[in-house]
Amino acid sequence: MGIESLLVFLLVGGIAGWLGSLVVKGSGMGIVGNIVVGVIGAFIAGIVLPMVGFVIGGGIIASILNATIGAIILLVIIKVVKKA
Image (tube, rainbow, N blue to C red; front, side, top):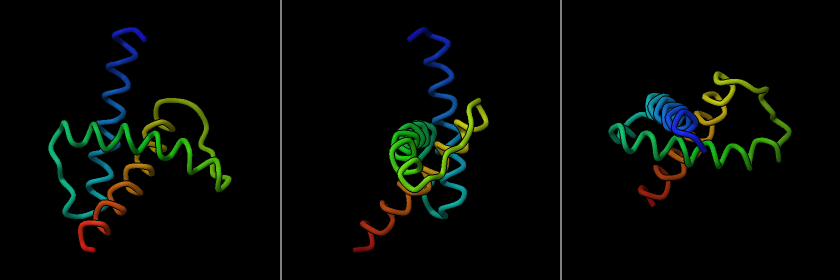
């Protein structure tokens, strides 16, 4: 993985984590937290979404959308576990 790929990976993770924290209110975690949530969310979405038959095309926008959906799933799970 080159430096450009790593930067795109972190940028997509940061944007996805930020968008996910906007959707799930009260989940702001700062820039590093947003990147971590976005990257983990992309991993979750990569596993869960094809299982339910929801596949988004290729490209940077599709990657951000996919990672955002995964970040939302992750943040909702974290919110439910914190309340329990």
